[in-house]
Amino acid sequence: MLSDHEVQIADSDYGKNYVKLLKVRREGRVHHVQELEINTALTLSSKKDYLRGDNTDVIATDSQKNTCYILAKQNGIDTIEVFAQILANHFLTKYPWVVKANIHIEQAPWKRIQQGGREHVHAFISSPECIRFCDVIQEKHGVPKVSAGLKGMKILKTTASSFVNFVDDEYRILPDMNDRIFCTVVQAKWDYSTTEGLAYCNSWSAVKSAILDKFAGPPDQGLFSPSVQHTLYLAQKQALSKVPQISRIELVLPNVHAYKFDFSKFTKLGITDNNEIFQPADKPSGNIRAVLERNVKSRL
Ligand SMILES: O=c1[nH]c(=O)c2[nH]c(=O)[nH]c2[nH]1
Image (cartoon, rainbow, N blue to C red; front, side):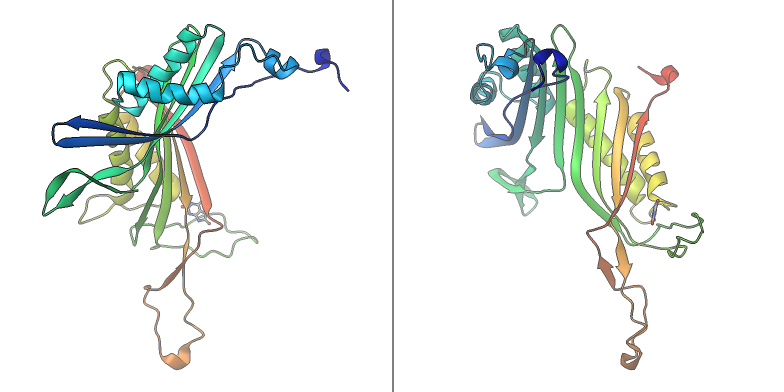
């Protein structure tokens, strides 16, 4: 057995994952809902809990869970980004031996039920276009680092996408594709360099729109994509130009392939392929990722 002096705990945190919380806010007959799933993670100044089984500094993960409900009751929930900062600040100030708090929150996509073009006052439908999430990491005596993001946004277009002129060697069988289906499941995460005066909801919507704009283009016309890589870059650049407070954005766009069904063996049926029938494939998928950040001169 190694002695404690021959090893060191390089990193550690502990907390409660998937704390589910539904908040109802009533404005007379008009009700509002926010459903969150929260992960808390705390790093303590001493490692005596790991090293010696000494739990005297341990804020139980059960207590961390309770704290989520209590602070939601006491402070309300403005946005997930604000609530995550309230939680992080609470853990760091109430327990001086907490040296880092890491809060991740995902928001369930409830939307008002619409009937005859009118929004319902208290009935909602889950509309999983995508999941909004945020991460707040704060160190003792430090400022909170706030990131926001979206995931699971599946989008598809039937034309205005190509992929040609790629490496042509003995490994290649893929032909040049001048007109293909482009389907992806967007995952985006961005960091805010400052949160002063930041409208979190507007910023989040602006990034979502930037991604959709550069993927889809104008409604009646579209926007040509020479590759997933280039579309990804255009979307990131648009996000940085729309929201000055974003310092960097990571975008992951899997290339979810849809293969043309091969009708060539069905000649007896007289079927001619006209680019209508495809086989969507979950796996494998291409995976295109980049992080775009501002050059020093263009920082806030
Ligand atoms: O837009 C694309 N980028 C790639 O890198 C790639 N690779 C591939 O097989 N298809 C595609 N499409």
